[in-house]
Image 1 (tube, helix red, strand yellow):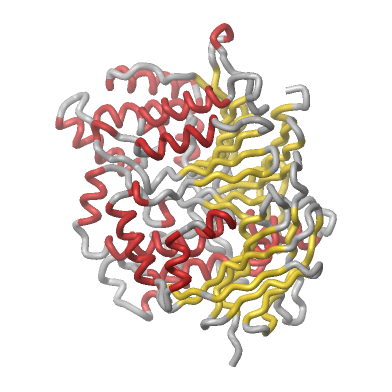
Image 2 (image 1 turned 120 degrees about the horizontal axis):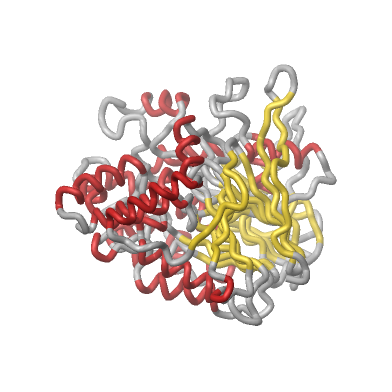
Length: 559
């Protein structure tokens, strides 16, 4: 029997510098040689590597013609497995669009927090899936403008909030009365989450034809991941956490991280070489995950991608945290140096700088002040009793964004200001985030006489792609932006004996609620932003469409 396609294909990296290379990720059901054959003669082959009984390949496609789009097929041991051949399939051929080197146009669609779609025919408890709705629009309209890249900014899977079908599957393999209960426990259970999420027909086709850049957030492992040192100590005292974190990092490396890397980075990666060269790559990968868990400095999950005249710096805001209460930081010193270099060096010809971070840099002011207040109390500003109470509040209210790491907030603010200053500064610097289950646009404000910037700096937050937010939280988010919320924040700062933030900011759009995606359209030094909601339509409310609810210019060619 010939090999079958278990998951994928996913079109991941497309080379914007040369315009003739790409990578396609697949999972097969047995060892085999995976091959991508393009209609224009381009292609590539790769032997699968094995992790925990699963077989993966990341095929390097070469020979693409810059500035063209070509359809492709996937073969396993010379047997065609993609596209599917079932009758009535409504999705067109998967394609690879090879950019022309030096291109100054880019369309970026982004969002975060996608809970797995319900079974076909079932009622969707959280409303239409924005990613699935985007797939339907692109598949049904050949003239629709496709994103050049899709940024998935965290919570691609929910290891701690599983669906009812997944819970039934888990119950068939272990006793759910034992921890971690209905949460995933090991690598095999993680793979089931990816099947549930990425085998949805529309999303599967979309990921096969639009390149993706991804980064994890907490639910990819567990809610509140690395909130504090005491949280981590509590987790390490359980009997199930070690297997959970190792499996989470291993599955992320396989399913998401590998595809983020360029072909040159893959060729130079010793772990990738060790995994491919071993008859079974499980142990080398597991050893790497254990080292990364014990010492976050051993792994770098952040990365940089250049898309013509646009630079993307994707930041890990979860795995690399320094959790000592007296020295809390999003990153260690080496990661901070790397981030500074990526944001500020080599800016010649950079029209736009995109900073991907699952957690927003600029929160609603009351939320920011609450997190700064909490961080001060947790490090003992008001004594041990307040510190113990503040830790409980931190965990219960998820007070763990950039504001909860005051040094890192100020460091990032200064880096963005530096990157946006001078004659070679980009027209826009956009911090693109998710996590908070609503969308908004915020912009920093300096006193006019002291404003050093040449760039327009914005916080663009878009979440969720497919999830929900309780009504009381909607009220709290609206309050957080109000004058009353600012007064509450001021009172919290006074109690914590902290000063005002390094910079003030204002909301210039939102908040918007619902399943949604944002798109940045960049052309030269101009930039436009569009926010779209997934809305049910038709009498039976089973179909959905993306409806624009906000559109604006962020910069024009004279910027």
